[in-house]
Image 1 (cartoon, rainbow, N blue to C red):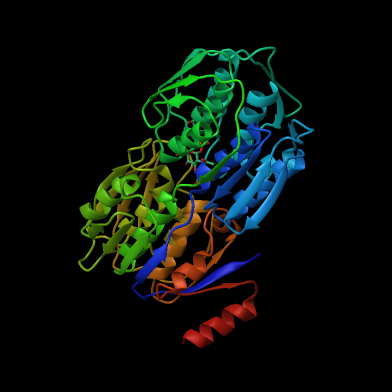
Image 2: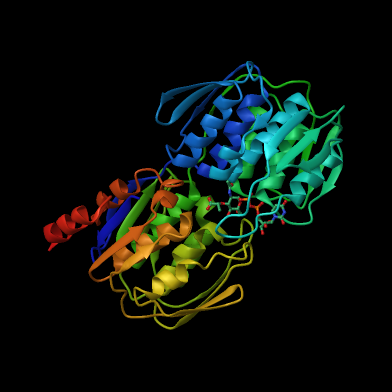
Length: 430
Ligand code: EPZ
């Protein structure tokens, strides 16, 4: 298994270019098969989850041509299979977006039931509720979700939970249903808006994305388009907190500052200086960091995908901070790892009580999931001494060229795959 080895202590300084949003791209790639014409998608992040989903799309017969690392051409006219194998769902649960795309286009879809994952049980009851409301018969047999409809007809759907996945999946089916659909209590994340804009660029008629009421007027068919994915607000936020934790000065470029408002607000609260430009944000951490309270909420609240990153940074702030995780039930698994680095965090239910410490000390830790893994790298960058982060395959699911981008900011970090490489790095950095 590959690992990162890090010598901490260097403030991160400089500029980093942010890639396309993984969580927008996953849904948009699925939606791309809803037309029989050719679709070009640009600003794709070259990360594992994207590459696995492209394999799943190719696996059902779509023609997928990688123009370059960040651009793909897809044509869904040759799709011959509406069954998405468990092997893909096991790797990335977002394959379930193919359920909405295939049901919308072919009125039939079979997708292996996504399991839970490291951060929680991840139910899909709201997805199924929406599909049924649009006229589909949905059953779960032999680990498969089988959805089929004689006819798809618009309806008024009230989501019981604010859910990104269900909002997007229902939007895709409704785009090709007969008549009008209203989704109430919809998720408002930037990537929900990006998917709606993408579908509209293919001829769909979707209004209100980004608010909690989305109105969709079904159309007969969707057509070709060329589209560019929005920047990844979570990758940007991760680098912003890396700047804060290492007392650095980092400008994240190619971002939409509005998408980062909750993150920026917290960085200001803990004593960082934040400067916003049209498509960039600069974070300077020159003063000692202060404690604060944060609760993760659906957008525009503080994002759950940025919870481990702020918690690790608060672990180095003066005073006691409280972090409440209100979205997922098991998103504090990094706390035990951080304790090995000297972190002083106590988890009670869905709340972490964080007593700031003077410093972290380098240790061997394992990434429990994607964002926690990135947060442990941040801890290693700030720590005194050498940190080895194991299981970085989780991190590679969502961060393109993570170590290269950090090195360009002055970090001493290297991807390694055995003990002798760790020793060599340790000798080299002294
Ligand atoms: C998306 O997951 C993201 N993944 C997650 O990012 C992100 O944490 C999450 O949205 C919240 O912003 C992708 O976009 C691929 P949800 P999703 O449905 O859609 C409950 C990352 O790190 N719920 O908004 O699965 C659910 O249990 C990943 O990039 C139901 O109860 O999240 C959770 O408590 C991790 N029933 C809450 O809603 C349902 O049918 C939010 O989940 C669906 C969800």
